[in-house]
Figure 1 (tube, chains in turn orange, cyan, green, yellow):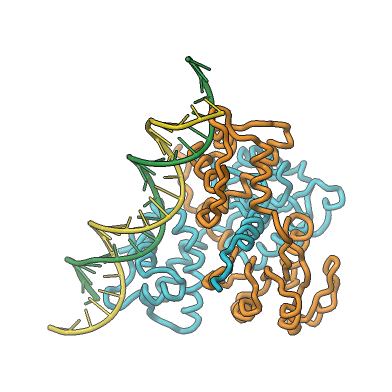
Figure 2 (cartoon, chains in turn red, purple, yellow, orange):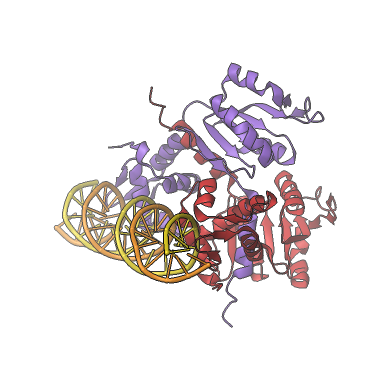
Length: 217
Length: 217
DNA sequence: TAGATTGTTAATCGATTAACAATC
DNA sequence: TAGATTGTTAATCGATTAACAATC
């Protein structure tokens, strides 16, 4: 009896979904039919309790005494993460990072369709980017009004991101994949932000390495 | 009376340090001398309580009735995050993502020194990468034994990361900046892992956008 | 049936927030 | 001194873990 109560899936659970999906995908490929929460927990380095609690957020489809059907689990997670219309996506900033991310989006991301890329540098505008041609960011408003993209990928400096964010919100962007240092806050209702702060990530790694306990001699 | 009790800084606090640093840096540049926890909280979108709790983890240097001295705060955060010897760092995987990350490391990361880059593709080996020449990953062991790098950046496929991780641990790598889909677990004592799972990030963004509450009409 | 494992409730743990005495 | 703001303890909140009855 699936009780698809999605509004109640908490953020920590949502963040774990892709990992569950990857693991279940692999089990499926290996031809495994059934898996228990404790087996999954061992593979993930977590607890069986957490696995069961998480799976119960999006519908109880385990079988007592047996475990979970891998194929069913796979289909549920796939539906949850990747079903429905592709999300039309624009890229803002086609520098080194922007180009890499656009390649990633095209080759490895499911459910997103890159429909346009923008930059403000004369040297970038008009260049090819995969199937696309880089457009002048001055034309961004017109483009969005016409094509209504839902997701924006920001690969621009902090300052530009701060300036552009309100405009993009007004143009109806519902999801931001933000690589700028600007701390884009998801304060508008119905808007989602995924911040990827590479600088913060490497800084906190540095802190931890420097301050790691010296291994007891 | 600074009570540099670093071992007690919890992970959530560590993750916030770079953000505090960026903000305090900006305040300093704007010539602001003093700031209260509530002012900081407003700028960060958090609570004054959290700011004070966090700052107290690494030494109480506020002044009652006045607030925090921006310059002192800046110097403390800088010391905490970036002081000490630079961390010798190797890059494994010089594909599109690896090259981008190496550029980022060279231009925007503080406290890290990229000392070598490795790949296994004949077409990559010998190519220039900034000041470096891409080395054959077959020579990685010898290199590490000789130069003892502390940090490894993994821009390789999941499978390769899974194979290489134990070797790197044995060679004394203390910090991993992991961009592969392999879920590198920091189970060895004194070893830190920062996972940057771009695929998971974009997948969870997709989930959230698709399942966002429709704005109440 | 007996054994196993789920679904789900209860207990624990840790992080965040609130409150307030100390003190500048 | 009076007002403001910290440092720190206490209360709350939410996530994780444990426990166990339901059931395959």
